[in-house]
Length: 232
Image 1 (spheres, rainbow, N blue to C red):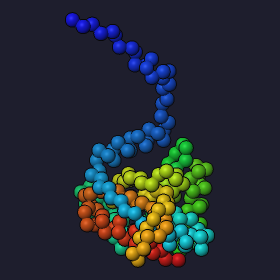
Image 2 (cartoon, rainbow, N blue to C red; image 1 turned 90 degrees about the vertical axis):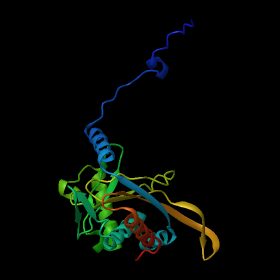
Image 3 (cartoon, rainbow, N blue to C red; image 1 turned 180 degrees about the vertical axis):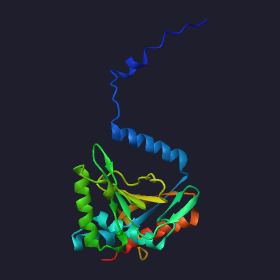
Image 4 (tube, rainbow, N blue to C red; image 1 turned 90 degrees about the horizontal axis):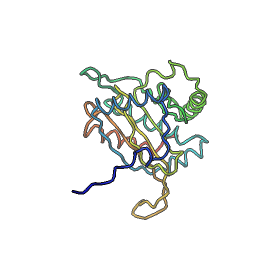
């Protein structure tokens, strides 16, 4: 009979173990993430968009690419009523106002204030409002009314150059959420010719009970169209 030596204590293999209790925000994020994954049949799709025109417009209008992307999503939402909607208690709710919740991250928290009636605002108005909301989010000054009323959620992780693709979590009962990663400078084909291009990946997560199959694909395609042909 072979007698093996007793296994070393697991803690000694891992070195000194430090226990850290999550704060209130950390507990909330953990709980909500688990609830969403357990209760929402999430469908995820992604598509690459040529961002060259959007970047040129951002330079021309001295605005952020985020503002142009929020506007692209808002315009697509006006054309896709099933995306600007919710699945709640076995029925569908379709909203007349396009209120885009924009996620702002910092080291300690995640806040998603609402840009109300985003589709009705000019690029300049969107840019100014996003700057104001970002500053208030980073200062921890957002009020409950500023966090209420979102019909859709948008996340821009473009500030992290290594992150090209990011699958967002839906905020129930919303039908959809979109995230974009960093701009990638890669060769693209235009009019049959390979040229230098700037590409971003648009990732869509949606509740498959309301935004499924063709609806989701059509919505994502509309976003890409508005990114590639942004209106000033």
